[in-house]
Image (cartoon, rainbow, N blue to C red; front, side):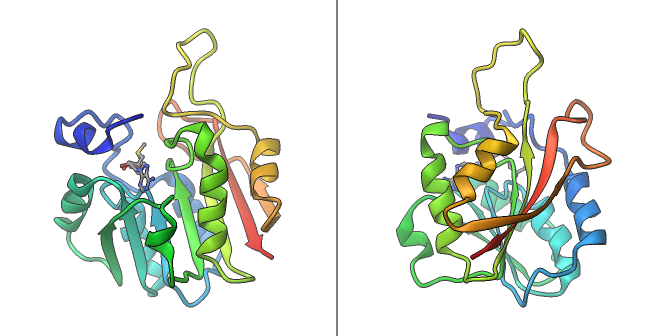
Length: 196
Ligand SMILES: C[S@@+](CC[C@H](N)C(=O)[O-])C[C@H]1O[C@@H](n2cnc3c(N)ncnc32)[C@H](O)[C@@H]1O
């Protein structure tokens, strides 16, 4: 299991790009139905996506299991109604009694152990009401062919994503984003799912 807090403490965070993922900016320009909020960003890291979601002018909660990541995220200037919390997204106690209008997923699903994907699907379903939005950019093929494929990140196929979310969600859109961080081109896929 990855010790995420240690990775932030030692600066071993190759995923940290200093800016929101291009796919989110593309989605924000295209898709406006995020509900009344709050929007949850699980595995938010330093919070670039949570701050970008501030343009929606609704509350945004960035959640991370790493206390160091949350402390670093809080050091950035405020850009909207966002807040950061430390907690385990897969822990049912964390989400007990909480409801969000949307979840934005970016490199949390690929970070958790594949054996916990059912827990992840349950966690997203458990914090969204019927009609709630799961929007995510998913890492399909994080590794070059022949490269050591030990994760994280762990890849996934679109069919697998549909299968994981099918019990509680209906997919209503999906496409390969036009822009991506260098090295992630054509390896990501934006999926939009509606909670039944
Ligand atoms: C690959 S990093 C990506 C961080 C951020 N999304 C980004 O792209 O910069 C994965 C993040 O998920 C967090 N994480 C892993 N498991 C988690 C869990 N069960 N609950 C909440 N956060 C988790 C890690 O601490 C880490 O910040």
